[in-house]
Length: 206
Image 1: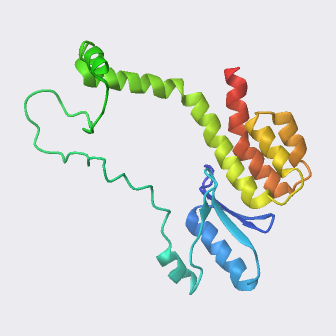
Image 2: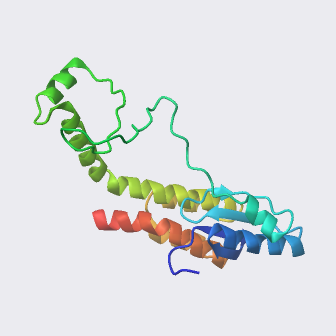
Image 3: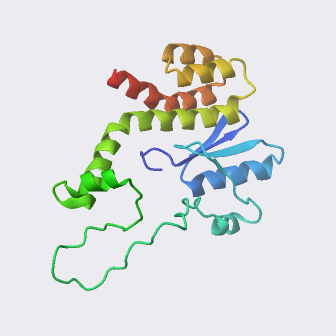
């Protein structure tokens, strides 16, 4: 298995069962389920903590043949599809831009039209600036969401769960670590891995 971060992680009860690619984890899950039919196994996307479900019936080859990575969210029907590439013509090169409807007040259009390069260039600059400005808060929110999703599934019935959740969203790492210290070691370890970026980002931005 590569040294990069695993894509999926499986737990048998409160114990780590497997981590790695989806086929690697699925094979271990099938092996365990076949030998221990009453095993309580949960499989997560290791980054987002979304639960993954797949059909373990049949032979390993049959199972892997049915296995497909979770589909990405579909593009909303109202969004226009990217234009198909055609023969290059005169003028500026294609930038991979996609035309979509934007609704603004007249004063907004007036301001945008007066900017160097026009409305489209000004809008792209504004979006890029907003993306950079929100990078820290976005990283915090994503880490908190993944950690809370995992702890809800794996530790919702453990002592200190509600207080630990509050500490997570309050960015109180010392209290968070203290509250989960008595939890099963595998659950605690993965939860600290998930929550770590939220606390680190906040510390760096302070």
